[in-house]
Image (cartoon, rainbow, N blue to C red):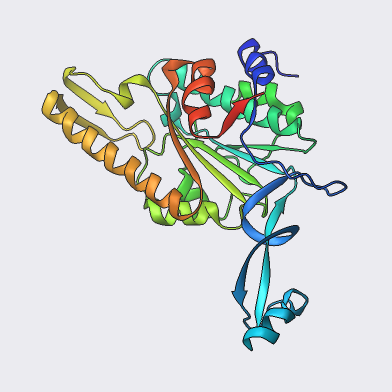
Length: 285
């Protein structure tokens, strides 16, 4: 069992912010954004070739002479996958960012286990195939370095992520790598019943201050750039960061997913009470 007292306090105070389904005797308790075979009716749709004829509403056909099928909300088993970016950029700044990334991964894993499921925590590193960890692997996860060179889009291109359908999918990253937000969110949302995108930044990444002349090193690619980090440079960066966050938020709304940005320097407990609860990712136990 994980021996992180901060995670344990948050584990006692919060639960996953998912709707519960009062259906006795079924394998799952949670409802998703898709349509499936659970017992809760959602809406009608015109029949299309290939639809299950058992879902045709014959009374509607008798009234309107149109074939309509009944859609039901998809039931989620307590299957949770937590993907944690383990690249070098997650080590930037002080130790708050990698620490909170590990704490978030562990907290989501333990909260999901309390629902009776078998959650998987997948560090996104260079060890292919990626090796999912369970609750019994959390101490091992805390010891793993964040030193990967591969980015999330590159791993998706290699089909390295073991994405399982019809479950809760959580992705924790800074998302400060070159990518197309529309394509990225679409790929991450495919087959998931619930998708949470958690952007984790350190305080300087979220709100940088002037530093004067600096040699910047791309921690993942190794390239270098001499740059005057003044207020003008910072404003250009903040404009780009805001545009990225706005587009990630927009694409998440289109995919019925949740996007939240966190500052690691606030600490896990403050983030649980604040941004994560406000986003509906967590709620008080």
